[in-house]
Image 1 (tube, rainbow, N blue to C red):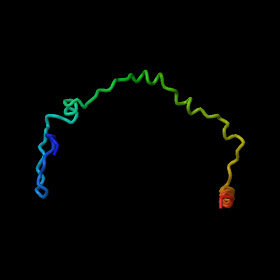
Image 2: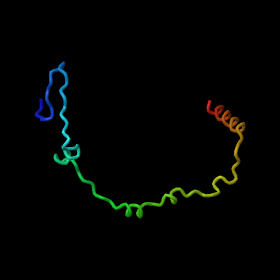
Image 3: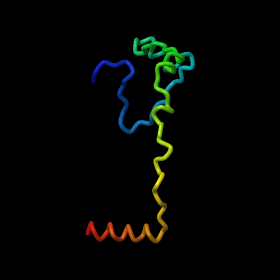
Image 4: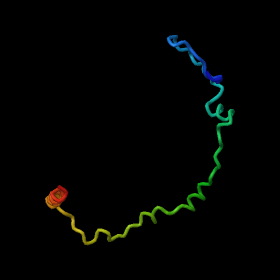
Length: 89
């Protein structure tokens, strides 16, 4: 077995031992103590907002996009569905 202090071997059918609680340290403290916690660079949120593209520019849709189109009735839609199914069969 490899030499890891946190690993140990127990007999197969023995009852599991109780893991002691360590209330003094958190997981983050342990990660920081072992050099596994890396601090992120802080970014200014205002800079990100100013640099980002305005959402309204991305969603800009022509107002008359549906002009000249007619809304079909349910019966017309059913007929179109049947025609499509006949074509694909």
